[in-house]
Amino acid sequence: MKITQIEELEKKAKQVRKGIIEAVYSNKSGHPGGSLSIADILTVLYFYEMKIDEKNPKWEERDRLVLSKGHCAPALYSCLANRGFFPIEDLKTFRNINSYLQGHPDMKKIPGVDMTTGSLGQGLSAANGMAISAKLDQKDYRVYCILGDGEIEEGQIWEAAMAANKYKLDNLCVIVDNNNLQIDGTIEEVMSSYPIDEKFESFGFQVINIDGHNIQEIIDGLEVAKTVKGKPTCIIAKTIKGKGVPFMENQVGWHGKAPNEEQYNEAMKCLE
Image (tube, helix red, strand yellow):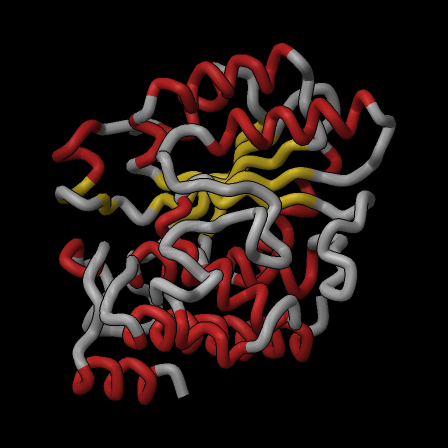
């Protein structure tokens, strides 16, 4: 990939991060930490990898994305807005009682959202269904499912992982946001899911480990995933919670807290 293309995606990721901060600050509510950690991954998916059409959100041939960690909706909304699914200005209405941009994605109200999520652990099951549907209908679209590393402590994830292997869902790509922090502390402190790669391998997945903030590595990982046949793929992305805003980075307190005015200004300055 050309250096200029990578630079453009890096610039776009900064715009996505600014949208995240804007959304969470505007209604003094939301989850900035985990949203910032997946900003680079979502940027590559929505502005490089996925086959989508912002003018036709329900296009049957489109690739699908399930944000299983639905509380990180600000990242998804910012990508959709920057891609043109709805006005960027609407990010300021996030979590407002009268807004269609609620705290978790709603597929019935928000253009570009493929699955309503928020109850952790359920997204992979929905993604399985989409991938199975594609095979039954002989469609070539791909399904991407983003999981949190805290979320995979849920048992339903592993039931779904078994099903993905059983049905040989090679059109499914799971991406684990491994920022090592969840609401109550580190993954190890709460309920360690390590080694994540070996667990998914034991469930029959092709596993790819990447730096979740390196645009080229993200692209390369997604390219490799498309070559895997006969089984699903899991990309484990090592990330930093709060990435891009130094005072938020690796701080569990920013899991679900909005910045005040001073912190907002500082964050936006960091992202210029």
